[in-house]
Length: 323
Image (cartoon, rainbow, N blue to C red; front, top):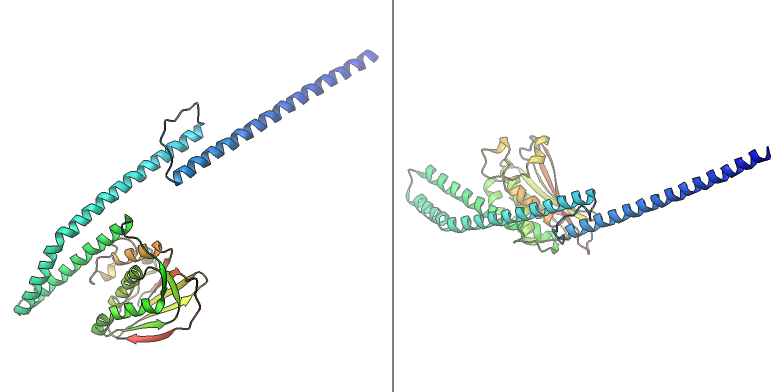
């Protein structure tokens, strides 16, 4: 009996030692795999960081050195790098083509304008045809100049230079720019008089807001009103351009900032559908954004959000009018 008990104890000790060895080896394997996973994640993070900084070297991939995951990641980053490089080269080619077209068409368009104006002064019978020629020439000139601006901005040739600007200066410039057009159409253009300040590039922001105001005047019937007001938020100054024009469907709003997009209801109006696209590009380049509300038959409100000046203080808006 004692021999049996002794044998069992011996077997128990042997089994316990075996289990302890198994547990020890398992812990070693777990530690090893955790360590390898940490190293893998570190290497992947380093690859991503180099790719973001544009410093990823396109070297030969060895299965002995990299895991399958690293191999796939590196191939993806290499392909993405090549695609980005090809896209940049294509943009540069397009930029050169547009610049060449703009340069080559400058003299012919100028000549068309001059001869059209001469004919309009001398001819009385073909006045309608001559006015159409002048209108289409202006449209062509505007289209080419807009394409040049877009291509230069997208390629980084033109960059915005934000500075602290008074909103009053911005709005008064726009009011003066559109005074003749509002007077001709008998539209009242009212702007907010405020001491608010924003951080923006004055020239390009006038271009962006001007495109919105131009559309508001264009699609507002004679005798209507276009209002521009400003309001301060915590991080942005909101500039609203509000009209009581034709408005648009809610489903159409996401498409209006597309390049060359024109709604079916405004095809009879002059334009090429590039102004709002340029507006969004300019505002986003200044870390701002644009929102739109509209209703058919009741008008539209375009809200441009620009970064607030560090020295901002809220002021009430007073309205001045032209028209």
